[in-house]
Image (cartoon, rainbow, N blue to C red; front, top):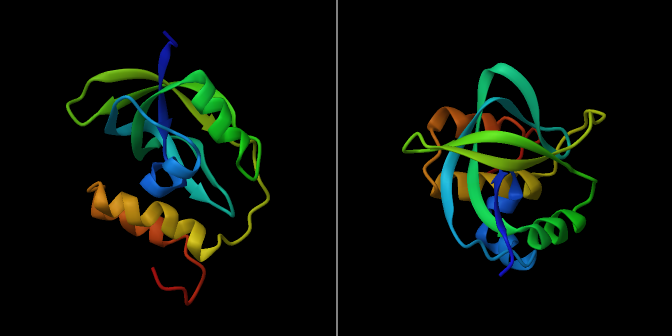
Amino acid sequence: MTPLVWGFFYGGLINPDVMVHMGMKPQRQAVATLPGYDLEIRPLMNLLIDPCATAYGLLLELTHGELTEAYGKLKAVYYPQPVIAYDLEGRARPALCYLLPPQVAAPAETEYVNNLLEPAEALGFPSWYIDKIRSFLPAGAMA
């Protein structure tokens, strides 16, 4: 039996269509928060350490192979970091969270932001967090 690990996902990989495309078949999943991190999409999705912030996402239970395969298909190299995320019942879950090194700020593409916005709304993320995601849409873009 292949061991499973929790991953904290905060970007387009929480989109069910993207999960299928990337070959991800989570055994379990839960909406979760990651205190101490803030979302940025400039132009790629990333989390930055910020003790006053909280990121929302999904905890997905996957194999290491699924994690490696999914992140190997992305436009940039994300590096795994150990984190403690919390499901909505307040249970702490050790997880891997993949982060980018610092990136040169640039506007995000509308479709890229919408790949996160649509599932975030469907999963019931708080309105203030939905507004934060929308703030990364290019000027004049429609969600």
